[in-house]
Amino acid sequence: MSAAMIGYWAGFAKTGVPGAPGLPAWLPYSPSRKSYTHFSDKPRAELHDPVLGMLEMQEELFERRRKNDQQWFINVGVVARVIPEASDRTAAGR
Image (cartoon, rainbow, N blue to C red):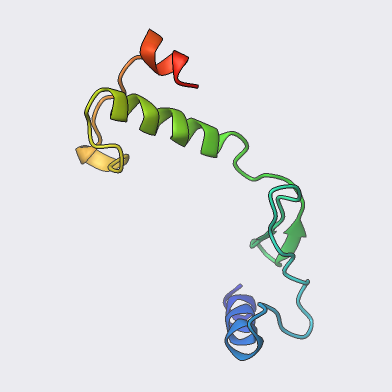
């Protein structure tokens, strides 16, 4: 996997496009085609959303914290605050 990552990074540094001979093409991401490169034993191109709903969940979390005058950008670890319950005001803002 290390050699594959080095190959993708070197290709990106040289041409602006991640890739190297013998490796699968790194497909460009777009909202309609949520492609990414999956690294395991061998890299492979995937054409599905690896974290379906993650962006929507983050947006809901941020919106709830904003509406409750909490910091919205600290979301992980021991400094993360309790997520406020959805209020009528939060739900109406959608």
